Length: 493
Ligand code: BES
Ligand code: ZN
Ligand code: ZN
Image (cartoon, rainbow, N blue to C red; front, side):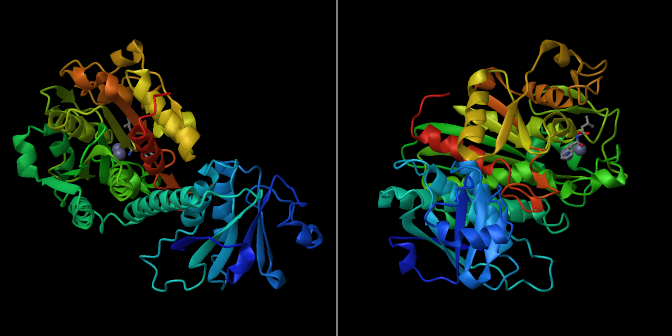
């Protein structure tokens, strides 16, 4: 499903093959629902969150939502589109949903849900499905009967489209097989974005240039792959920026674990280890389309972690760009090595007001927080809280804070080098990985940095909310919201 359009019309004036009706808080007496109340009851429809009921003769699809809040409406809209994926209806219409006469947040979530729920990845299917919706037309007519401010509603719809399309763009990259999406291809995708948007500029570093930069950690991880690494720097430069933000992404196009090889079952889905880097590209696409007055620099370390005669080894000592030496004790803790160099490079290139990194960094984060929630860490509360607020309150993505502490820092001590790439304890693995990254943050950026471990939500094995199977595009909506808030000049929360 690709197209959403807002119509300055009543529902009855809009042509469509089917109407989608959200049944909010099991209110069967609402005017969109009450006519079909008996039929719905007969069909056993109870109006539970995301429960759907198709009344084909009435040309209506009903879907339940626990409340009219953004998260429930986003999820219900996604469920409705999903229920119609294998049907013949092409064009749907629906009312607009708002939680308050002047708040368009729910309307934006509705649009996001429709586009995110309708996502399909068919690159490798011989037959592309012709079924499912092509268009959804959203009416001016509001669920509560609120009189919409048309320009505000249109803006909410437009923003919802941009953030959902950026998320789906990231899903496409992440879902692509590792042999079709390797570092050079990621750089190519960044190049296509730069060509489309006049305010995007691209610079790509090759291994020779990275050698000159002293990126011994990133280059070691990349060595055994037949695909050369790339450091992608994609920058968005508006005319009068109110702030500058750097984003760093882990772009492991495949993580086999290296010589500390992953067990077979754990290797499957490791094409998704490029989720952080892909999210950075998607965020820049959205920022350029929204024309945000913020200068945003995206840095992606695109690397493949493989085995072979040339592979880096446990016991190797690497020198990162900032001169720190790293004892390798596990080649599967490769993301932090790549990020160490990319973080140093990003800080040298740009003095940013905020520095965020996005990475599928640790299995421990998934164990600790569950597969739906990102872990957010840093030295200072302010950037961390900004991420938490943008994620949980604005975007509908889940994020939770993990605290650094001085005792865990000590577990990274090395007998032979400045630091070890793994901790000497298996407890607190998400935090020790974050603290390792902290060693590569300079004084000037210490209070401006937050690390976001998206290992849990980045890849979906059992669909949830607005996420079908496969890549979720985690991180895109939360950071886009954070940047939008920053652009408004809102004080930090
Ligand atoms: N890419 C993985 C982390 C990961 C695991 C992401 C599961 C998504 C799902 C990372 O490079 C890794 O392998 N980390 C190790 C670190 C360990 C060796 C200290 C891990 O989490 O087991
Ligand atoms: Zn790994
Ligand atoms: Zn990894």
